[in-house]
Length: 162
Length: 171
Image (tube, rainbow over all chains, first blue to last red):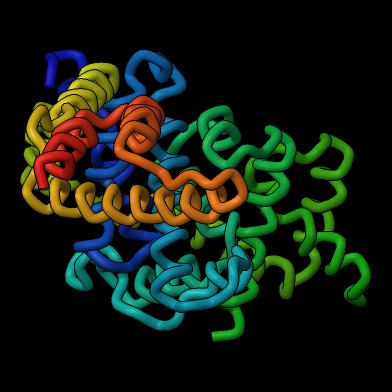
């Protein structure tokens, strides 16, 4: 690896890993996703550069993660169904989730459908800007905003019911 | 104050947009006015704010360094696509060249098969010649067979014919 590529890996590895672990709910699979994303980036390094690197990596990580979910669940390709996560251990260590409300919140985020789940993760947890999210999820800026508000509203309704 | 439930629904649909400060000024004013008088929507707003803060405070995940070490090793091992393609092409060409080289010497099995085929062909030609010669009162002779065998040799382009033909002549 050259120095530039190493710097790119260091800069983005946590975000790629975070999204992969959030979507797959499985550490080993998330690590595979990260490796695959960066190896693909290495192969396409002449085409992908600058500001497009992070959305590109996140798109690869998300697609790979959703593919893994499809294979694991043996369901027909259906993003809505795929995105419904059953109750499972949260990505962050349980000890890291300080209180009961955070645990409930994390489970509620995991239970969102796509693309709401990825949107909430990328915007509210990773703090990415709208442009990067739009490029990652192949949505327009206005779609990102509308879907994001809708996702937060769903969270509020779900948590209100608990 | 009587709560207008239709208005609550209107607020419910816009609460997150309001908190993100993306609502128009006019709508924001209406919403704030409603919030001042509606306990239900106030509670919803508090929960929305709590969710917003809770999401921001969820722990960010760190990728283990061992994962990245693997990326380094795998990417270093990888050849450029053109180099890999060239290597595979050269290998395929080499294998093809090696296996397609004609064997200069026939095997014993090939020799026996060619001999049997030639015997059969010459026997057939002789039989046909005998049948044909009845009408003209002649039988086929060695002098007739020789040019036929020569023809076979030319047609099959197989040097064995000549060898076998000479063996046949000796017997």
